[in-house]
Amino acid sequence: MRATQAPARPIGSTKARWAISPALARQNGQGWGQSAVQFDGKSDAYRSEKPTPATITGAHARSIEVWVNNPSLDSTEECMVAWGHRGETLANLSFNYGSGGDFSAVTHYDQDMGWGEEPPAAGQWRHLVYTYDGKTAKIYDNGVERGSQDFQLATAANNRMNIAAENSSQGEPLFESEFGDNGWPCPSPATSPSSASTAAR
Image (cartoon, rainbow, N blue to C red; front, side):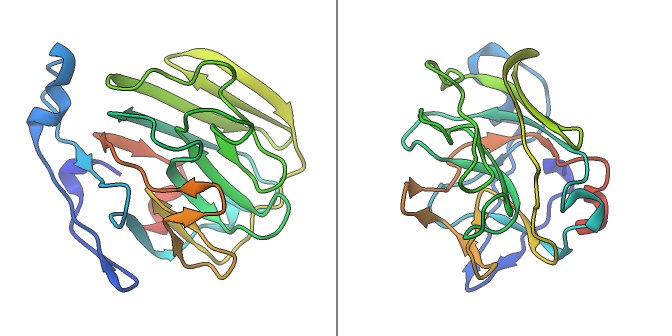
């Protein structure tokens, strides 16, 4: 998804509000000249029109790449991109930009990954990446590997893909969980949840 191609869409009973502004991509003197999408972390999100492709559910390989500028880390679990659903071990996939803890980077549900002692710095553009090859999940911050762990993923099928919200155990957009705010209060000029994600839009 690129911000320059993003229409406003409803998400459940909540309207998705898109703020597209080239100025957002020039924070901290980085004049990329690209547009960005800003979410408020409370009720803004993008939700795909179709279920996530089967090729990136179950134990299939997948990758997520996000350019993000999070102004502050207000929660241990701030979702950037998610599909599958919560409530079952390894049925969820939420790529996070949280402040700390064992699920600050990825929530698979019950078996997660954290950014370590220091999460990616807030208030500046970061290039965050998640990869899974069918056995090993890895996370990267600006090209530096920050974690690697083996999992037997079972990401649930027939759920929508979200940007800035997870799916509840019922498959509905979730902005808060037992761990706090799942929203994503930051802009992103480009989000690419694997090469198969186009089919989910």
